[in-house]
Amino acid sequence: MAIALRRLRDRIRGRLRDTDAQAPTFVPVEYDQAISDAYLELQSRLPAARLYTASGLTIGAGGDTFTLPATVAQYTGGDGGAEYRGDVRIRLQSTGRFLTKSTTDEIDAFRDLSPTVYLSVPEHYALWEEKDQTVRGRVYPGARVAEICDLFVTLEADDLRDFIGSGADDMDDVEILFSRTAATALIYYAAADLLTRMAPEEQQKRRINPQVVPLWLKAADTLLYREAGRRHDLEDTGRVQRWVP
Amino acid sequence: MAVLTLAQIKLLMLDRAQANVATDAPATVAEQERFINEAYADLWEISGGSVKRVASATAWTSASTATGIVAGILTDIAEVISLFQTTVSGSTGSETDTELDQVELGYIKHVRGAFGYSNYSVPKLFALTRTATLTPADVGKLRLDYWPSVTGFFFPVHYRPQFTILDDTVVTTPDVNDLESRDIGLLAAAKLAPLIGRAELVPSILADVSQRTSEMLERKLRSLVSADQDR
Image (cartoon, rainbow over all chains, first blue to last red):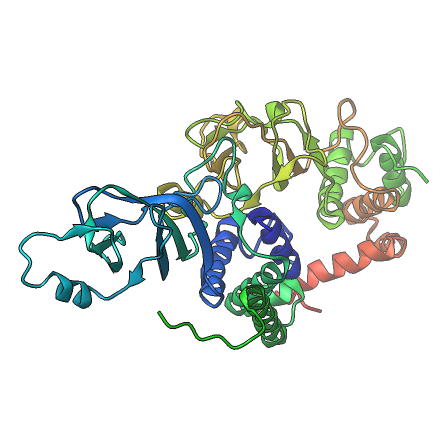
């Protein structure tokens, strides 16, 4: 469930009692920066979101390299710059088989002493990330015919500030892709961050006690732990597993 | 008890100063009004002023512009309480209009030149500066800087107006409450009495000033003498 950024902003603002527009302690720009930073911080502590894309990748005929999609839209209006977390699985549509993930050294070992690429049906693949965060890969054997592949990937959360617009939407409408529990954790966390940065005279003006900061951080941790548990429970089978390729 | 008019305040002042005579009056009409307006200024400051609510076209020369700068029309703004953004041209700041946050002009200049704050499609922040001028009619006009500089919006404003003197024709009733309007007459009498040889009446006049006004005047006098505002 996504929630519009402006709703979280107002809840944080209310929590800090910073509601006087004539003399605000923090302005909306500062709130949005705190929310965006907290969002990335909390997302990094949660299991990565998974994405399945049918026909998401094609290995060209006669080739052995490919590039993962560079643009994956995570929220409406975002620039969609994809950053992969690490769990990437590739399935050939021609055979239905998942490719075995290997290291680049292993692929090099397969290719050693072969001046040309051996073409057949790919079985192994290796990935690497280039300096512009483009993720490329090699397969072995190379593809004799063009191989369309289904992709199962995990993605890093997109930055809320990388909003390039969609229709009449603006930062107020940017979707924070959190559940209710995680969104509440974000509220506590961002409010604690801002209250810690608030000058003492502003705290007095807002009639707010800074000793509440540890309580809010603890609440945020508890909610986030619960959210991580929920995500794990979703994918868990309830029994110990051991998968051997 | 209703708010006293200028004429009623004059009578109160003259009665208490024992100067309510038709022949050889110790103070002319113009002098009486000056004493009254001097007392009114003191009460105005204590009273805190009222709020005026005006539409965008009354306050600014235009609606929002692509530069993010709009010139003011009003010359009687003492303090802006709230500035709103709305797409309704005649709105005076309704419950559906969104209030902007007031910041320093330096912050507006910063965000105008910044690139890391993403996009907003409605104005969020504003700053006001008073425009320097040699033209008497333009004294007190403000310049509104807002961000982001999107167009299609109007800016109704709620503000506390500056002090306006009382006169016989235009402003005949002070903008204070009932007790404070009586206090204007009493304070004016206390100022007038010593100058017409009635100094012995001052304590009895001031004894009838309302409690709130007495306390605020005492506090003001203390701050003038010792600069101590906290007692």
